[in-house]
Image (cartoon, rainbow, N blue to C red; front, side, top):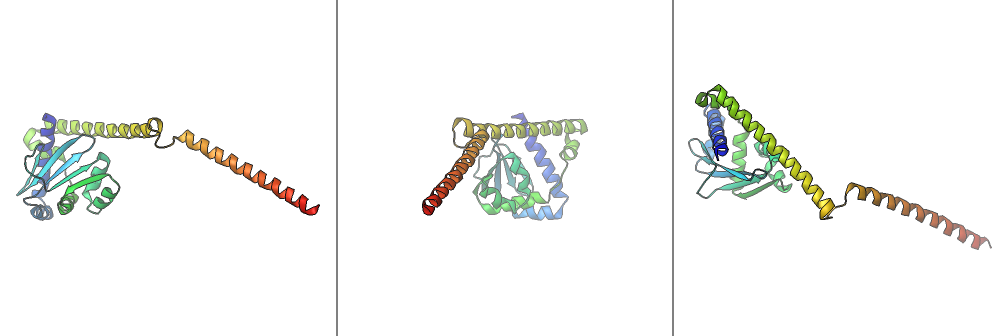
Length: 204
């Protein structure tokens, strides 16, 4: 797809441009040399592969065997920049990891030191207007994917509570609470009556 090619080109240009200007990022990249990692966004159902050598190659299709594959939601993507978040994301079922955990951690460390303006790095190759247009379209696509993810979450919640009946809905919870309160009141009244009856019997 043309959109995938543009995303790969933009990411590759931006990442390598920043890394080439930062000694710490170059050292982090060197630790990943010869390795590869695939990142799949669950809502988009599309994988991007990062192949590490003297620079980073970003591919939408890859024939080789990956050292590590990550699958995560859009909401968890920003947290990927922090190495400490990987284990927490896995435990929370927000990230699925298949392969070498060490590669994922090193990739996270590489991302943590990278701050870049995609439009700035694309402009020497495409011109300012085209770069701005591409970035704007990518941002709009990103927002659409986030909105889609939110709709899917709401739909899943409605299916679970309304159709599959695996969890009670808000009205059912409120009704149940009312019934519990009423039962508690009835029990208290019954206890009082029994106590009064016992006292009468004892006094007689």
